[in-house]
Length: 251
Image (cartoon, rainbow, N blue to C red; front, side):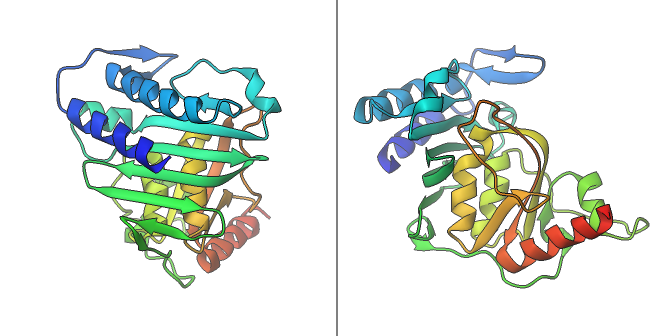
């Protein structure tokens, strides 16, 4: 898996800031020939090595056969395609192996900034080979919080003027920055998909962080419905504190 993700990242970097064919899928989601090229590379490598595993990728037709598989690969060949096409560096390659609805292995690679996150269940998280951990504590320094401002404002006095961390084009990268301590908390505003989340989920958890729905319920993957609602990620204690605040505010 690690070698495959590195190869895909190198291909993405070679195509980065070049003239690419691009189009819109669905209502507004951009896709380019780079997304497809990386997807083809990853699929060829992983499916040939694990032919009995299921497959779910943003750039592949969904095959319901994955629902009957104990293990399924969940892939986003380029998370942050808008950033990629705009020549910005906040994009990454995401690969997760999910077993019984939860990730057990994961890699997220941001080639432009040379950040390679790697996790295996029970083995911790590394970034570029060094162990990393989410920041401790329960306080909220909003300059170290990323996500939709209207959502984060629900944690504060309504008149407080918030200055959040600048927007990060890749949701997966935003979440992984919890794992290495670059951010204290990160939110997702809804409509994110399995492939945006699964790899980052394990990376955060194995770095002594937590990532869940705002209710605190775990996120489950490789189900028929792959779209998720409002989510939060943070170090374990801060995550518990944030979830409790949302519960209190809702009550």
